[in-house]
Image 1: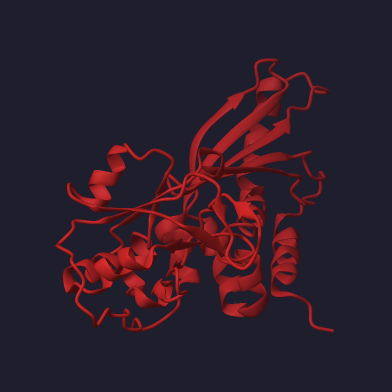
Image 2 (image 1 turned 90 degrees about the vertical axis):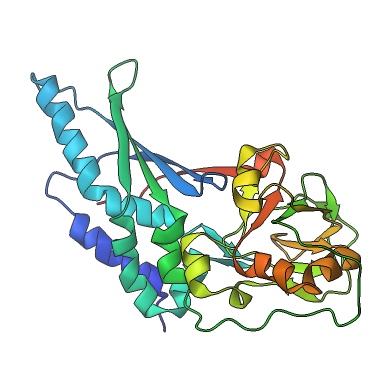
Length: 295
């Protein structure tokens, strides 16, 4: 029977993190912040009150959190959404080299703050890990990009400085009678209404996807970040639908796709990651509670 690679990796990290005194009773809150493109991990552990030296006990808890953080954060990263239907966990099942590289990614986490809870009974440590380039550098593995599609028939268009797709309201899910809310991912796809692929991760140079990503996400059409990424004169497009079981892929009007794909300069906007997607506020930050398996 084949054991999934992610379970092998968790087992290895568990052995490395084992200690004679037993595990702390960790609680962890993980937030994937798609706007800032980071994973925020907040780890909470109780301070033993049986001894006389509470300061030394708190220092010991802080050291144990630091020691066990690689396993805790690795477990949190398993749920990060890569694209429609795949998470980091799914990729680990398929790629042993990726499983071996993940601890190195976790090592890039930065401690932001450590403090006691107001009742002084627990230590809370907050860490940040960027999705780009830290995680992206091992999950983006394609070589030369495939060509972008091209509109061969003339369409009225002009040169834009970027592309902004507004998808912040419920939209029809292609192939169903349901509606859904757009969900961010590291490698979303964009289709037009005929299901022609306008953008997928393998159409973008791998170095662009690893460092800056294919798209940026916001929940505010007036976000100053839009000007930074898409310039002063972007093409605004209202999404017409969603695709996939996890609704990370977007559908846009065919005439809007043609305005992009007919022009070499506008097609280059796709290849250089100058795309911003406006999503519902409740999907811009995804928070989960986990009980790390540390022994």
